Amino acid sequence: MAKTDLSGIFPPLPASFDGEENLYPEKIRSNIQSLARYELSGILVLGSNGEQVMLSEAEKREAVAAAREAMPPGKLLLAGTGGQSTRETIRLTRDAASAGADAVLVICPSYYRGQMTEQALVKHYHAVAETSPVPVVVYNMPANTGIDMTAQAIIQMAGHPNIIGMKESGGNVVKMGEVLNATAGDFQVLAGGAGFLLPALATGAVGGILALANIAPALCLEIYKSFLAGDIEHARSLQHAAIALNTAVTSRWGVPALKAAMDHLGLYGGPVRRPLLPVSEEVRKDIVEMVNDKRVIAFKNI
Image (cartoon, rainbow, N blue to C red; front, side, top):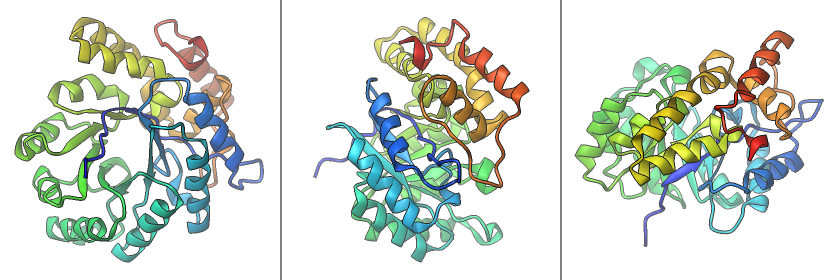
């Protein structure tokens, strides 16, 4: 069986909630339909930007099913399925596959992080991969988990035939290079942030799962395409243009800022689920100013 190709750009779609904080599947579908205008390789639901940890298991299944209904032919639907136990992660993974996910993105357990040794994590991921009906992508997100998985652990995980790649959100391009060198091109690495997309591509990454791709898909795609075409100067210029807005909707103000930017651009951002809070009016104005920066090829400008 041909291995699932993760090349390209994937937006990690935020979860859509109505004013009562109930899941809003209609808006998940409409956002995907709007983003389908771009040459994206697919969509991720239930990632960190998708407020996965805020949703019940029933809501997670509903979100994946809604996304599946809206996905264009030939595009990949990825779903986040990480849980705090191996049993839970296996169950979430099977549920996502049953609801229509083409592959799953699995963040590591972190509550007992003192016991999350390389051995424990490798065994966890291998157990999930062994039972998963779809390919597994390892998700390294140290800012949220407090665990920065080592290159050695990821290389061991990559030895399982159903583990096809990793999303590296720590921005460690040295680690990406170590993993790619040890796996001899048989393992796919995705940048987990637009702020380091070009360096990741230069190291051998095949693309990225990028929060910025929800609001500036054309910009992210142009960095990717310029790199593939060998136009490094143009790619570098665009990479520089992406940094401020990407930082605003990730490490600086996070999911509430991303949703505010989506609302400004005519997509559906909507409310966050508490205890997250919406951005202040002052921050919203800053976000609008950054989105309107003429260097940023934002959603509404294409």
